[in-house]
Each structure stands twice: as structure tokens, then as C-alpha cells.
Image 1: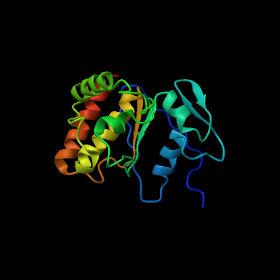
Image 2: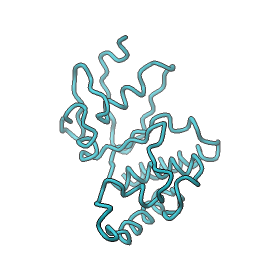
Image 3: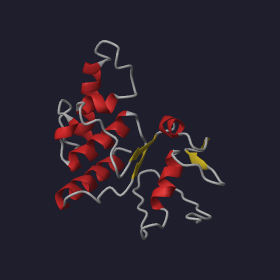
Length: 174
């Protein structure tokens, strides 16, 4: 079954773009192609004028694209800080720059209004807090484009308002 055909999408800096459609319309498929999880049958993905190699999330991350999936990819038995830096530095290295990482995370928390304790165990967090950790993971990796897959589906009305406030701050910060 062909889900996407002839898609042409331009995202403009300093904006929020929402994709709306019925279940099965291809929204998540498109996001996964943009992030490199899926490979399109044809066409290309360009980020800031550079073509991304198909099916390569590392290239998307390196180009400044971050993605927060509908189903979070966090280790419940680790702290927020450890989840955020996981994959960015060797964890076996003594301390792996934990103090600097903590300061950077706290600055992101402050800048974007993503209130979460870096020392909290992820397994003890609410769904909204887990989503904030996922957003912080992307921002920690210097994402300039943030893809959110069904970001409000599991949030309370207050958490949805908080997410929209964070998005406004992100746009204001560029």
C-alpha cells in the first residue's frame, strides 16, 4: 500500500509546522523518513541545503535534526542526566564530564522551561516529564529542527499547554 506519494515539504526557520491527518495517512512514516529511520522509495531529504543519506539517523542528528517518538526511548533504571548523555560520550570514562553535562542540561531546562530533575530516575517520572527528557536529549545534541511524533497524544491539558509554551520558547530562541 502506497502511503506517501509526491510529498514536498519545506520547513521555514523560526516556525512550527503541524501535520494533520487521519490514522494511516502517513504522518509518522513521513517523520521517520525525514529522520532516517525509514528509506523512501524515491526522492531525497535535504536539511539546510545538504542532502541526507537515506536511512541514516546519525546523519540526521549530525545535521541538526532531532526526533521525539510517540513511544519514548528511555532507560527507566537510569537517571535523566544519564539518559540525555547516553550515546554522546563514553560512559565508561570516569565521570564522562558529568558536571559539565549537568550544567548544560540545567541551562537547557532554564532556557526552554523543561522542568525536570537531572538526578531523577526516569522510571519515577510522569509521561509529561519523560517527554521533556526526550526533548532535552534532542536539544543537548544541538537539534535545530525538532520532529515531535504525536506529542500531545499522552499529555494532560496542562502538560499540553506547557509543551506549547516550550515550543514558543524554542522558536524565539531560533
